[in-house]
Image (cartoon, rainbow, N blue to C red):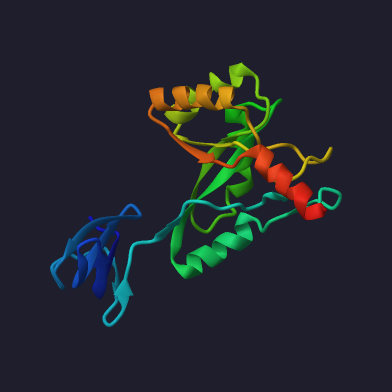
Length: 213
C-alpha cells in the first residue's frame, strides 16, 4: 500500500520528463505510473499538476558542526545540522553525507557514535558520514575498518596534506602513504570506497611560505 501519491506532475527521470504519478512507500519512491493509474485508498495525495517533480537531492560532501581551524587561537564551528539541514530541506536536498574524523587516541565506532549523536533529532534530512582517517593512527585502528563497513559506513577519506600550515593547536589531517595504502587494502577487501584529498604536502607548505614572503 502506498503512503503517498504525487499526482500529475512533470516527473524528471534519467530517461527524460513526462507527466506521471509517483507512488511513495516507506519514504522511498516505489512506482511511477501514468496519470490516475495509482491507487490512492489510504494514501496521502498531492496534486502536482503544473509542477516539476524531482527526486530529493543528495549532498555528498558537507562540513556541519565542523571546527574552523583557519584561526586556531579563536576556534569556531560551522553551522550545525539543526540550522543547515533546514536549508537543505527547503531547497530539495533530502540526504547529505558529512565527515567523522578519527585521529590518534580515537576509535572508529565510538567516534561515529559521538558524531551521530550530534545529528540525532537535529537533522531535517537523512544523513550519513564519511570516516576520515587522520594523523599517525596506530595500526590497530585500521583493523576496525571491516566492522565499520559491516555496520553501514562504507566510505573512508584520507588526506595527503595538512592543508593548513603547522600550528600547535591545529591537528594535522595528513596521513602517511604507508597508512593510506594499508587503509586502501582494508577498504577494498571489504567492499568499501575511498576518497583521497590529493595534494603534495611539500608544495602546499612551500606556497604558504612563498605567500608570507
